[in-house]
Image 1 (tube, rainbow, N blue to C red):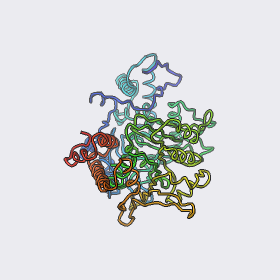
Image 2 (cartoon, rainbow, N blue to C red):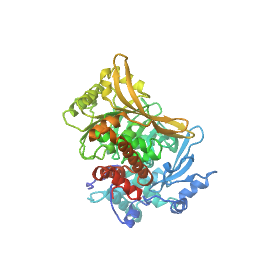
Image 3 (cartoon, rainbow, N blue to C red):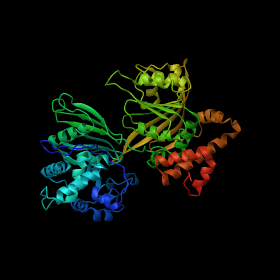
Image 4 (cartoon, rainbow, N blue to C red):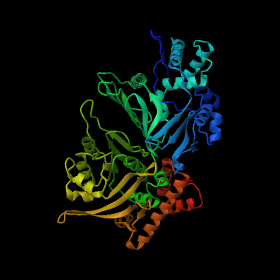
Length: 558
C-alpha cells in the first residue's frame, strides 16, 4: 500500500521497492502499465513488426545476426539476437578484441523530460492515499500528468518509451534493469565511468553498448541504496545489497577509493536453478553420469564438486541437489546465499561477519550437527570448517560441498594442509569427487565435467590415496566416458537395497534406464521443476514404470 506523501521542496516521486510485483491482469491493463509486452516474439518478423526500434537497429548492421529464442539452442553462431521480454533484445557478437553485448530497447528520452515527469507525478501524489500495485499506480499518474498537460512533451518523444523509462527508474533499477532481465548473464559490472561489462553463460566476458557517466552512476547507485535502506556515502563507500531475485549487488562509491569513479558488480543467480537435463543439453555432463549420481545420492554419500574459478561448481552442485529425496532434511551453510533448493525441510543458514558477534562457517557447521540433517550442504570449504565437515562425515552425516581444486592431487593437498588440516586417515570418508573445468571452443566458453573419482581409501604406509576413476573426459572427442564399473554402486547401493551380487547386471540396467529418463527430460522437459517432479515419480512409482512412460513419449510424472 502506498503511504500518504507530502510534496518536498524539490518534488520527487517516492522511491519504491524495486521488485516487480507478480500479478495476473488482463491484456488491456498490462498494456496500460508496461507499454511493451513481457511475452517474447518467436520470430524475427514478429519482433520487427512489434518493435520498430529493433528494425532501425538491424538496418544499421552490415551483417544480420541469427535470431534465436534461446542462446543455448544455437551451438555455432557467434552473432545472435534474442529477446528477453518487455521489448528488450540482446545482440551478441563474439568477434573482435572483446565480444560485444548490445542491448536494444526503446530510445531513452532526455533527462530533463524524465525529471519533469517525476515532478509532475509528485504533485499528483500529494496528500493522497493509494492502494494497489505500484507500477499500475505510477502508470495511471503518468497518463494523468500527460492528459492534464502538466508536462510539455516534444513531438519527437514517444510517450510509450517515456513511460517505459519512467517506470524503470521508479519501480526498477534504471539502466541496470535490461541486464538483470537477461537470464543468460552471470555477472554485470562497471569499472567506473564508461561501458558496462557482462559475463555471458555462453560467450564469456563481453563489452556492452551501454555507456554510463560518473554522474549517472552515482545518481542510480544512491537511489538503489536508499530503496534498500542502505547508507551510501564517502564515509560509508562499500555496501552489499541482496536484490529480490537473489542477485548480489556490490557497490564501491566515490573516486577516492575507486580512481575511475564509483563502480559496481552484480552476481546474478537464476530464480530456478539450472537443472541436470539442461547441463546434459549443454554437454557439461552426460545422462549416464547424471543417472550414476542420482543412484548414489539416494543412499547418502559425501561428495565434493571441485574446479577452478568460474568452472561452474555451484551451478552443478545446485543441479545435483534435485536427486536428494524430496522428504530429506537438509541444512545448507554459506557465506553468500547461492544454493537454491526445492526441498520443503530445508534449513538455510548464512554467516554473519560484519555486524554484531561474528558467526562463521565453523560455528554454523558445528550447530548443524545437532540438527539431525539427512544432508549437510556447505557452499564452499576454505578453512577450518573443513575439519568439522569431515567430523560430520565420520559421524554418519553425508556432506556435499564445493572446493577450489583442479585435480585430485590438489584437493588432497588442500584438505590436509593449513588451514583445513583434515587428518589424512579421514580423507576416505569422502566418497566422491567431481571435477569440472571451463574451456574455450572457438568464440564460446564451455564447461565440462573432466573426471568423477570414487575414493576407496588411504594407505598410510604408502602415503597415497586409492581411488577409482568412474567417468573421464576425452578432450579430443569432447566426450565424457563411463569406465564401465563403479565400486560404490556395487558396494553401497547394492548393500543398501539388500541385493546380492547376482543382481549386479540389474543394477547397471537400472542406471541406463535412469539415463534414458534424463535424456528424455533434456529433450522435452529440461527445467529444474520438471526434474524435481520426475525424481518424486521415480521414488513413488519405481524406475521402470517411469521408464515405460517416457518410452511412450509421456511426461514422467503423469
